[in-house]
Figure 1 (spheres, rainbow, N blue to C red):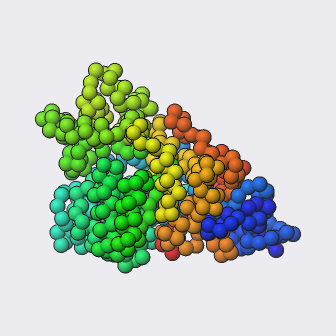
Figure 2: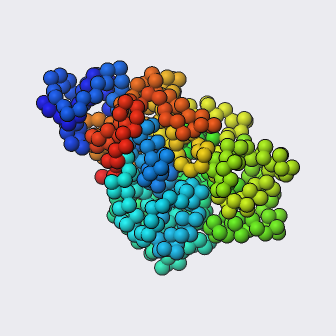
Figure 3: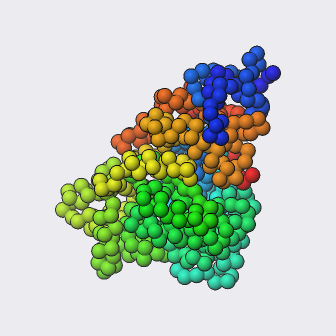
Length: 513
């Protein structure tokens, strides 16, 4: 037999959860043509994989990557960690479909997470936005309907339930995304304007998602001290609408485990993801109480300029800061010298309370500051992460954010940790780990032609050394790719060869199967 690519001599871990097998994989064009003992076969390119695992390309279900994959220093960060498919619009973040005025407002709000790349910013439709990625990305991007953009397009940033006309507009925008192949709807209920949304609005939208066979993926309204209310709202949306619920970045402690069991007992179809680090990352504006974030980015900045407003929100903000562990600045607009430094230490040096330093920092840098929130010492982070990753409903994600000089490490070493370090540490078998980052997320989000190595499937493949696969990033130097990733193919084309990015850009928009 003759193939375009032949991967020979490796241990195929096919993504189904079944035991690895010593098999060869033949690829013709963009598809897997044979998985068998293929001695004597010829190919235009041979990949000798003896001693290596041959797995489906990893699927990242929650990552803020789409603009970073268009170019720049982090364009190949995903494929260097073995990732061939990434879901778009995490937390409901996106920029379509929006009028030019509204696009400018959303761009300002999300700039802290995505920067301000020179990409034109001139589309108004979903199709126009998605067309921008054609021929420009190394791995695939999968649309999710973004609740933030859908809501802003229909009713701006105002509180209260949508009018009948606004509700119809939101539903029409959601349908536009679903017809473009969106696998569901993502929402950010601790961000604006999602934080202003009432239950009925979300249920009505999720009925449309359920009718399309899609998934509702919320950054829910509460975690940790507000976990019960956040989970119960997510599950109530699932019960009322019939939608499948996938909770973003949920850590599995006793409380979370009990809530998930409660949901399953009431027939809610639930899953969740989490990155394997005991530190979160989001914008510093998140430390303000919800009422002070209302109205969008510009409204928050105006409040910070008012001393009376600061006094009104000081106690609540201080309490929110106290809930966190060490807060380290990751990205500060026009303040790179502050990046990598502790908020508490900077406040001490300035002779200020943490809350007052935070107000001044946000006011002095246009509110555009991103922070890493290390879990407090009172939590056994390692034990919680092991329990999270081992949970049967868990799938892997990075929640990677690619701005600033000190981005969170999760955008660079997550899958090496899950499939390498957590396997060697005994949390999972190799077959279980691969399943959680390939077959399981592909099945959950209806990507039916990938996630499994078998004849006829898309030739998205990651070849790695299970013993060497390890996260090499550090908090001081996060932009370091992992060790152990040997080859990555995206629909048969090499995007990583012998551990190095090739520069190839075969990725495309991959919609719901």
